[in-house]
Amino acid sequence: MIRIVKTTPYKDQKMGTAGLRKKTQTAMQENYIENFLQSIFNTIPNLEEKSFLVGGDGRFYNKTAIQKIIKIAIGNNVKKLYIAKDGLVSTPAGSAIILKNKLSGGFVLSASHNPGGINGDFGIKYATSSGGQCQPDESLAIQEQALNITEYKIADCDDFDLSTITSYTQENTSIEIIDPYIDYIKLMESIFDFDKLKSLFKSNFRFVFDAMNGVTGPYGKKIFEEILGAPKGTVVNSIPLEDFGGLHPDPNLIYAKDLVNLMYSETAPDFAAANDGDGDRNMILGKKFFVSPSDCLAILTDNYKLIPAYKNGIYGVAKSAATSMAVKRVADTLNINYYEVPTGWKYFINLMDSNRISFCGEESFGTGASHIREKDGIWATLFWLSIIAEKRTSVKEIALSHWKKYGRNYYLRNDYENIPQDIADKLMADLEASLPSLINKEFKGYIVSDAHPFVYNDPVDKTSTKNGLIIHFKDGSRIVYRLSGTGTSGATLRTYIECYETTNLLEDPEVMLKDLSEVSRLISYITSRTGKTKPDIIT
Ligand code: G1P
Ligand code: ZN
Image (cartoon, rainbow, N blue to C red; front, side):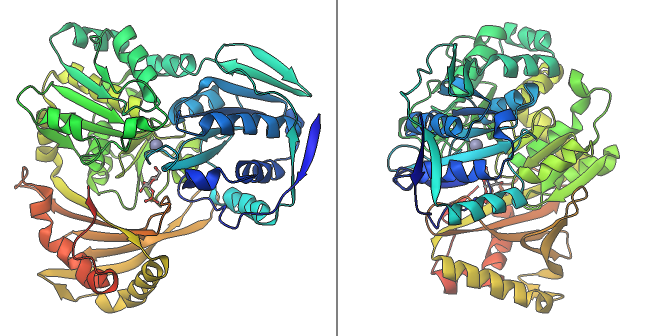
């Protein structure tokens, strides 16, 4: 039986950089998930012809939310649901499943790299038939529905068992419980030379993959250990846990601490990678060496010919404006397309769909390619393994030879967290207004050459998006300012700082960018407005 339930809107159901992201207890409020799902379905015509994927990264409240989503979908006469077995699917595998099965979209329940548990965060990433997250105009249409919702439709039925591969029919909806690994693994096999990788693992090469108690544990075990022959135990923190075992499942130098400590110790293996909760982000480490995500994109692009799927050429590459300029140097040299887009993977989708780019990346530990429409942590790891298998040299050597060829863009992201929203908004508005007056001014020896808001004109659907403010200096250094769109408490101001060096290649970025970080605070009055004399987080 289908019930129509009266409801009232939640005013905070707005989508940010990566879908809906909330404190878990916010999402647990009565009708919260129901309202949001109904709002999405209200924007999709002919649901009786549409099929969707449902799964998540295994965090707390996923199981409850998945059952709700199934019942709302039945209530809305959806044709078919593909439910990941045990409710587990990584964001990249979800994208692969949507594309391979030509689904109308999918729901990946994840707050990505944010902590989980009842006191952590919860999220819903809504993907369309593109295989990637919905576009800004679609988010607005959903938001409009959510702010005006009065009722939702839900099936009155028992919960579904998600632990076995089987299928059910309820009302007009068929429900298939699917293996969430197989399509993704086949896709990886079609891109990389698995035999070559197997031979790497037959040598005495040592690798650690940290799944951070998120969803890539089972993917990593299957791919690295079972298929490629890496020793058992190569994948650590491999069982998806509802609270990520208390970890903050964000693969960076701060939160992947154990892995970083291992890689900087005397017993470090040759290579390590970590993925975030839902498997789209990655961090790459060598022995006593960290590869910044901006450099990672540049190095992968420079080495595209080593990978079977790309050896005949790639269309081009794109990065978010906040990411360093390193990859542009590679694109210019290779003479391939180059684009700079706002922050958020969704902006790469049109470029990939129109064959303008093949690779893309963000400074926030995201790298990926057009095999799917999300960033892909395991893909990045397999790419690095392939480079190592070919060059048989260390990660540090690979990065150093890249910098010798192209120069090095030293880069830092400084985050100022938990700023009252009105103060953060005013800081950005005042800074924007002051940009023209900064030109030709000098700050600690850095002279401003240009300063403007970052405006992106999408070449495909011709929309313009404003995202952040950019200040260029005469020596090629840059500072980018923007407010985070994924936070769940207060505002986070991010400043992205870089300079370019051709000779001094092995310095500490914090040393190289000390003055410019200071300049970033001076120009925008961060300290007097927020009371913060230094960033809360430096990555
Ligand atoms: C952050 C990152 C951005 C990424 C997003 C989702 O968004 O900066 O690159 O796409 O998470 O993983 P932000 O909080 O900056 O809006
Ligand atoms: Zn993620």
